[in-house]
Image (cartoon, rainbow, N blue to C red):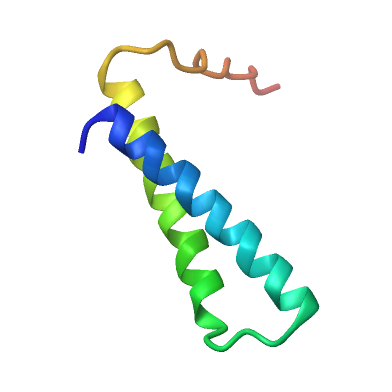
Length: 70
């Protein structure tokens, strides 16, 4: 998937989670596991985006300095 496709899919999944959460508050969900699946899919998409950013050479957090032992 291209970057744009992932971002479009991510937006659709976030909307889906919003709709499912709203539905769960106002009425019973027919398939409660849909909410969990959608949240996991969002996490997968965000992970892919982060991996691509890291592979592209995006600056990462500086390494933590070691404290001297006394």
